Length: 49
Image (tube, rainbow, N blue to C red; front, side, top):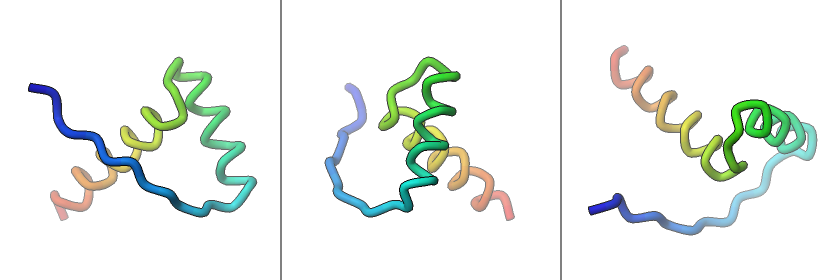
């Protein structure tokens, strides 16, 4: 079974969104997929500390 997805609304700085869009495109991911990956990686890294 796939993990559940939850829709949220957040406010980000415009320059942050533009940079994340660029990185997501370079990684051939959607913006949502890229943000999810970055957050998941961050959580894994902080768990190890």
